[in-house]
Image (cartoon, rainbow, N blue to C red):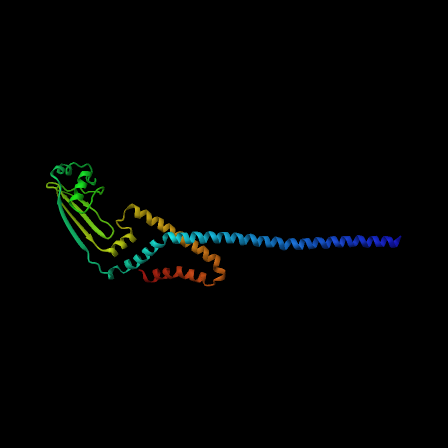
Length: 244
């Protein structure tokens, strides 16, 4: 009996030991599996954001490429404007309004009202400038004056209220001046005003996505942050040391 009890006890101990060993094995397998799943999720998240950043980076670069090139070139031409010679070309022209329209030059409400539509049409037929919709200066008793500046040029039209004689002058300062004025948004109108805003927003997006891409790749590119810091410090030092 004692021998049988001993054998039974040994068998029970073996089962307990086997179960414990089996549990340890399951736990040791489960732990690495959980760690692998966490790493896999991190890789997926990183790949997702990397793809998004690359997409927005190249899209913003593509839509702003031509304007970025224009503004870069005109940045140089503006910086060296004194060294770039340009001879303005002045063109003068004259004409006369029909006598039937002279009365329209005296009937005005506000000192900056545009010319009446029929008068503006007649002026455009007499000289190579169309003053339609432009603010006119009615303050003088003997003439109506319309300033018509544009990018790279100055222009004006003057109408004698008594005789209907029209005088016009255009001063063209050339293509470089034209592009420089586009850069500055000088006398370019509302459409170009909004274009500059949209272009600037695209450049901001391009810069921010570029910064985030630098952060994602910085671990493998040790010179990333020193160069970024240099890009910040260099203009700051120049401004502090040399601009007074």
